[in-house]
Length: 212
Image (cartoon, rainbow, N blue to C red; front, side, top):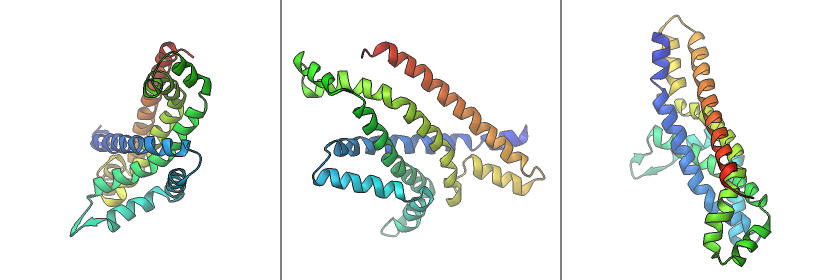
């Protein structure tokens, strides 16, 4: 029980890093998605380059770039800020492609029908296109969130005390050895199941609420 308690001490940090990175990634992905939807021109090209560049560099490399390479005067980013920033940056590129794919699945006639009913372009996006696109994107979005939950362990490299970091400390200072990491793995499995279960319930509600 003491080992499990120690592992769970890192749970709030793991959840905080994951949630923070997911929020940043989602916020950055939205304008990237709109840019990619242009399909041509300098804005599209810039967004395309950003997405391909960010996805092409491993998350741990972005973590080192932000932690060791970014500073304001003599002040560097904290390990937590660098970790959330790096994971959020990577998330933005993958989520932009997820959102772009979900938009492509919506028939162009939906926007035309909304306009014919007198809705403005903004209202059509908010009331018609957006809910359908979100419902389509939700399974892939959830899968990425679960992957991000596990990827959050890389922030332990720069000293953030999340689940893996706490597990490593306990393993080095006790005779429990690999058992601590088995416990940590079990915690990740439970968290992943909870996220997936919540996503399925939300998807069912959206399916009932959104008329196609």
